[in-house]
Length: 218
Ligand code: E4P
Image (cartoon, rainbow, N blue to C red; front, side):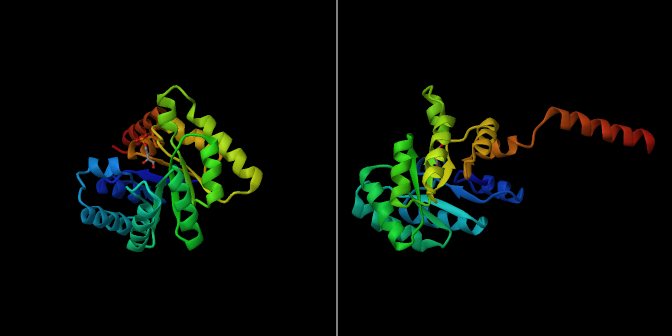
C-alpha cells in the first residue's frame, strides 16, 4: 500500500519523506491556500518544490470546471514535472477530461468521489487514481470505509487498473482499515501517518529496557 501525504506544507512533506515511507503527495486548492500560496505562478512554483522534495506522484488540482479549461490547465500542470498527476473533480466535464488525458497518456486523479457509481465512471474513463473521501463521509454519518470496500469489489470484478486512493483520511484506524480492505493508496496528514508509530506498551517497554541497562551499567 502506498502512503501519500495530504498537504502543501513543505516542512510536513519533508518530515514524512525523511521517515522513508512516503510514496507521494496530494494537494488541493484549500491546502494551498492554507499555506498562503496564492497567484498562478506561485502555485506552479510550489508544485515544483514539492516534486523536488519527494520521489513520487504529486497531485495538482485544476480550478476550471469546464472541459476546455481543465484541458488547458491540466496540460500546463502535467508539463511542469514528470511526477505531476492532474487532479480532476468528479463532474461531467471532469469525466470527459479524464478520458482525454488518459488517451494522451497523462495521469489523473479523480477527486471528490463519494459513491461507488462515481468511482466506476472514473475507472471507465481511465483515471490513474480515484479519490474517495472517507473522512468527509464519516462527517455526515455515512461509513466511509464501506465505500472503499464497494469500490475494491467493483474494480476487482472487472480488473480495472485505476488505483483506489483513500482520501480525507483522518486517523490511524482509517489507515489500518484501508490496508485490511486493500486500498492501493491512502492520503492523510502527517499526524495520521506518524500515529502508526505510537503504542503505550512500546514507550513503557523502552523506558524499562533503558532503566534496567542503567542499573547494570552504572
Ligand atoms: C484529497 O486528495 C483531499 O485533498 C483530501 O484528502 C481532503 O481531506 P479533508 O476532508 O481532510 O479536507
